[in-house]
Amino acid sequence: MSSRLFLFITVSLWLSYGNIQSHAVEAIITNSEGRSFQGQVQLMPDQTLELSIEADAGSVAYTFTKDTIAGIEMLDAEDLEDGLEAYENHQYEVAATYLELIHRNRSPLHRVYPKTSLIEPSLVLAETYLNLKRFADAAGIAGNLLATDFDEPRIHRSANEVLLKAFFGLKRWDESELLAKRWCKVNDPSGESALGWWILSQVHLERKELTKALWISLQPITFSSQYPKAYLQECYHVAIAAWIDESPEEALRLYREYQSRGYDWPDDQMNDLYARLVSLSLEAEKSAPIEDANPLTIEEGAPEKDLNLPLETVRKLTIQQESEPTP
Image (cartoon, rainbow, N blue to C red; front, side, top):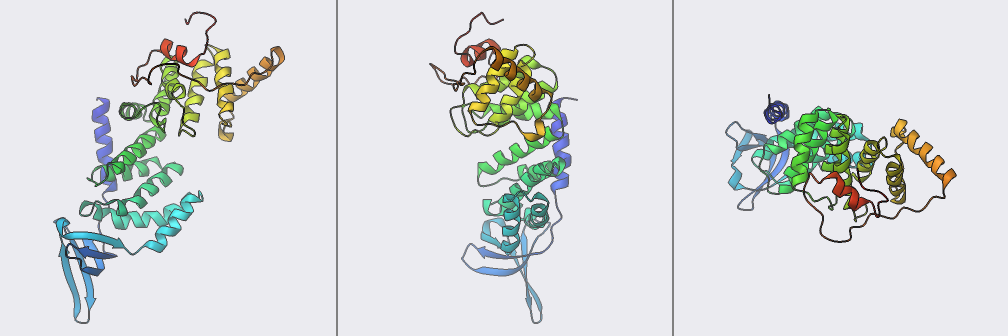
């Protein structure tokens, strides 16, 4: 089975997970004529919204189609505020408790009212799941969002990044590689994030494909002039791990540059690689004084967008002067 077909089947399964059954929730709908109605809103099988208002003699129901809705206001502001505050404070279990209900209430309405104002809690919940390592749940939300056409392309971009990180967290290397390559094709290595390059290089590192892992991870490092740059620290980890056996001196040089950028090695990654770097640093201090590492610079030309930038080219870009020919 091809990776593309497997990816399609897997996402389809998680899309089924994301299709939450609609139930009535309290909201205010403003129609195209400017009139507002408050009541219990529910998505109907014919893809219309039905709003029920309690009356003395029973209830009154109004039906709204997609083209007659000017706005929807969900009456969950207090719970949303609590959920977002918990997320900002890294209280992810608490955040999930609030945001899961909000996502469940809002997601059926996306089909009829695919507006950004309704979507944000779902994206935050997906990131909450990633932080909780509930990767299948995060993928389910991403699939739900990717199945809907939204008014802003940013929603699908964010959902695709959630899906990429979810597959990576699940150690689905083939799917991670496919999605990471797609990410890299539409993002520049000098941009604000190195997410795709980190995941793609990490996948190759997991497969022991060290040469590929090295030149992919070095691209955003080479072309990074923006501070801060998301996931650049992780690219350094991959590059150092891929280089330390072949060329400990270059791995140590990268580590010193890593430190000069203000990065501290994460506490949860105090592993054998870090121990080797500490040992190399101590040996280097005994033999020669430590020189400050200068940020990498590119003398001429624009950053190359070719994902398969040759290792020799990257080395020439990343090393100011080479004392001997590149092997």
